[in-house]
Image (tube, rainbow, N blue to C red):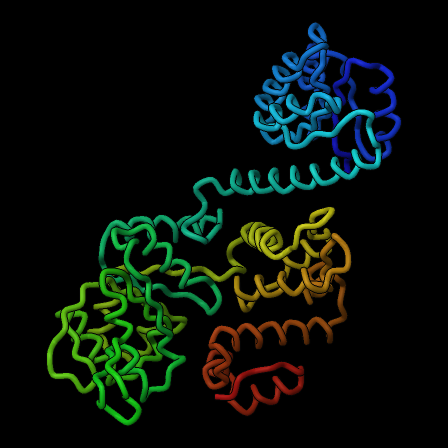
Length: 451
């Protein structure tokens, strides 16, 4: 790894020599005795760090030349960390330099150990800022709300999402579990005319059927046992904003009828109530199921499908997003890694494992594995083992028996993840009987939800 570059600007040759001797082991050191020499050194290569004595010729008795040079350095590289050198009697000039963009100051005579500590911290900050700016540069317009991605398939998602943000039409967001469907919905809401209103999500598969109607429509006091007070439902709470119906394919048929009626006239009645309540809101829904297939099977109303799917947005699985995987991994690493003397980074082995893994759990799995790795990593380098992935996943030469087993495990795991642990549906996709799939799951030591 290349050494960080530092420019030492001081009109005293003995100090320049001392600094070079002290820092040469850890830094690529350039020296300058005047503003003119400093600008030449900057032109030859932009240093990350600069130590700047404010008293430079032709006015070594004051700070005017040093402050002028500080401005020029920051114009050339706004991210550069400039550490100002001042005498104990001239701290006012150092503080003036701080107000103009210098990152820190230290006094003469120079304490080398103190200087090294300041430089190490300053370079760490420079690294973080540079990587963040580079990430933003890479992404450019390749983001929407909290979602980042520059792959063509995600650009298509962003294009559709931006267009529907300017309208109030219902939107159906489809995709595998963990792809970020709710983030897309939040992005659309945050860029819409309803952005100042609430965003109210409800997971239609996480609430028992006997409680779902009350959750959606609310209830009056005494409507049923335990209804001790009047309570507004999620639909009312979303008034003026957006109601997000996650996993809408799990909604019972009886409630599908009531939801359809609301979408037609925007009126509700609370459970136990007799008066209609007008509610103005936008509806977005999401599912990891094939709703058209559910319609054919009689499990989902066709009229409701057409009502909620005025515009459809399909979020691609992570394995189809190419370089986005690495960008997301580094973004999560920055989010979860605690500040320290040096930033954590992904080792080459980890990058290879991340690139070659299939990510059946999609972005949610990647986020969780990075969070795990940050906790387990003992040094700055995050390894494949820290991520719980096998190094050499794709490039390792395997015997046929091992290769066949790995492929079988991958295919079964993907099918189970696709159907959120539903064994019957995974077996149907794989062309297996349910008992056969259970046998293979047990054989390979896999985990799956009971269905």
